[in-house]
Length: 285
Image 1 (tube, helix red, strand yellow):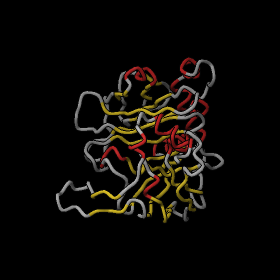
Image 2: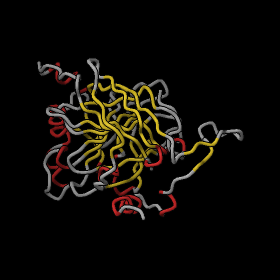
Image 3: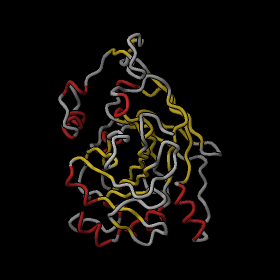
Image 4: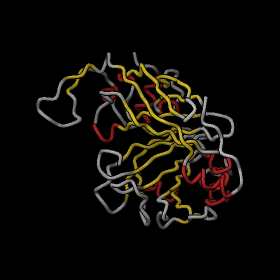
């Protein structure tokens, strides 16, 4: 029998139980007729990558004269964010510690337990709890079949969250949360960046959510993070989504007005940030 929390996850995503099943499937990565079958019930993969300060956060700390936090010895959790959101007791697939340069290497991640996305998550003093997406089934229509290498997990210092909160405005956050929260951290939020095929930030991009009524929760910070509008990204390509402060929420995002950017799985929950990069095509630049 499926666990109740997993049933809740499937319901949250609008899936039938068949979408949460396991099994042996051909590798769809290259969409070739001779793709080899992979046993998803037994396959375990390794996630290798590096924790780094979110670039604009590092610039903000430097401008404020604040020291950069150490990235050594941080606990990195490999999990599925939406399963974390519904308090699934087995949402975590593995944990490891970073080395001096922020590198991590976590093996034994069970592929059969992944349903929408995989994230590298951080929860350390001085940092906002974050989940950075390192694998999204939106690109392949299937779970991972090989090790995930070159993953990035972004760290967000609390002071940078404070700057983003002031940019969006505690009043706007309070409106979106019906008075439950005055900060992005309390409300829950997504910090995203739109990049082009070369990995460079895209200015003037607008995010299109599905369902569309979530569009008024999207904000685009100014270059100096003193304000945020709702017209489009600045030169850094950043956007912020403000959650309701209640429960877990699952939806999809893309870039408005172009078919080059695939729809991406996204979600939000109170007390946590999801860090997401939107790029054209199925491979990150």
